[in-house]
Amino acid sequence: EEERSPRSPNHRFALVAMLRLSMVQGIALVLSAFTFSADAFTTAPVSLGLRSSSLSATSKVGPATATLGRHSILRNTARSAARMPALRMADGEFDYDVIIVGCGVGGHGAALHARGQGLKTAIFTGGDVGGTCVNRGCVPSKALLAAAHRVQEMQDTAHLDGFGISVKDVKYDREKVAEHARQLSSNVALNLGNSLTALGVEIIDATGEFAGPNKVKKAGTNEIVTAKDIILAPGSVPFVPPGIQIDGKTVFTSDDSLKLEWVPDWVAIIGSGYIGLEFADVYTALGSEVTFIEAMDTLMPTFDPEIRRVADRALIQPRKVDGYTSVFATEVVPGEPGEKPVKIKLIDAKTKEEIPDSPLFVDAALVCTGRIPNTKPLKLEDQGIETVRGFVQVNEKMQVLDKPDGKVVEGLWCIGDANGKMMLAHAASAQGISAVENIVGREHKVDHDAIPAACFTHPEIAMVGLTEEQAKAKAAAEGFTLGKSTGSFRANSKALAELEGTGMAKCVFNKDTGKVLGVHIIGIHASDLIQECANAIAAGTTVQELSMMVHTHPTLSEVLDETFKGAVGMSTH
Image 1 (tube, one colour):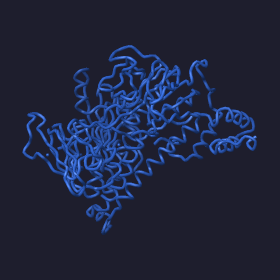
Image 2 (cartoon, rainbow, N blue to C red):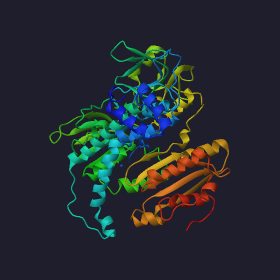
Image 3 (cartoon, rainbow, N blue to C red):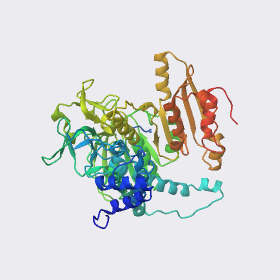
Image 4 (spheres, rainbow, N blue to C red):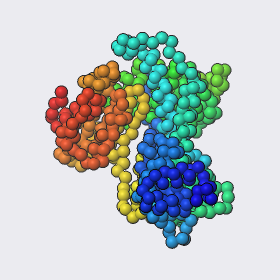
């Protein structure tokens, strides 16, 4: 049959994989393949990285689909074929069961889950498979950070001397570092696209506009595509305050900075949030001096205060980093690399008067002042749907509301950065899966208090739940006793073996019930350690239960063992 009806390489490979199964399953799968061309089978959702908005300074992969190549993806989908639910259609009234507008991590996760539920699915990519996370955020930034951390470690002669190691003339090739980031993004984006194709998701390489109930219009055309349910996942874009001129060379956002087209001697970073803090790590490791310009009164105001103090000692003080706080950059004029400096006008955030150091002249300025929803292209207002500063209003099920506290717009959902609930890539993925669950009739709500976040500096910072300040306010409002316990990397054998004793973990909890309210970590591999804590919050595990759980020795996880045992008055060796 294959000889008589040539198919695509993807189809042929899927067919071969199918025939490896049992005779009965194989026959059914062959018939299914010729009807749907490697249709979707149940698969694991994807969660890639993180992205968030501003902090401040003182004076950003799931299994199977995202990481495997085309052939591995098809093998996995073929093996899952026996579990594939029947394809559902909305009585032939619509072109699809589900249309997803936006193909970032949130849209991709929603598409995978929709196909896993047997829904006929299409996704508008806008020519941007992978979205911000894969192409301009989480993924390439981690590639730059990985290279920068290696340079930093090899240049830290005191640290290496502790191991009895000496290294001379540490050099890096900027173009190869940039190519590593570019190639990683390209590979991950390709794999995401392949996974959608292999699972039978129809890819529409166009920007989608909401054209009314159950309708999506291909931008720039009159073509309308219909679906019973539409999931909006347009993501976000960098916010550039008025007065700042972006040229992409000397004044740029993270979108351009990730290209690493040059390494300026002196960089001003406007805003010191996750993105700014990570880029300060990259630039200082590669030899730049960094000056933060921060409107808030303190370093990292959204971080827990104790974590903030350790971060200042570890990330700011030992490096070529200084900064202004309570200061706005009201005018930024681009320069020319190596020829003309960038000019920055600085004013006091409280008095609105120009400060004595203004104007500031630097080689380059990186604008990290947060992100705004990319909802304008959807043209929601044309259909009577109000947004708040561009954010789409949704309920806990991710259903779109026609205005704040308004009525549900039936069949319309919004996930990810565009709804403003939590601007993190993995939160978008979770919301996409949740929306699909609600679409198929299984009520689900995302517990945002249990979603962790991380800043991939060296050392790393990670958190989940409430800060101590927020927990105190909650305790006062609800009338319970607040507990706090800490653990130290200085007492951890694995951290000491790595000569990485800087860091701490802190847990805030309800003393009356043992409920974990928040956990904050700064230290080596904090981004990995935080997941245990997020799972504990999600599962409702108490500090009493956590204190009796066994942690592998010697591992960094014992920092958390110390923290949880301390919460109930136990000592740890």
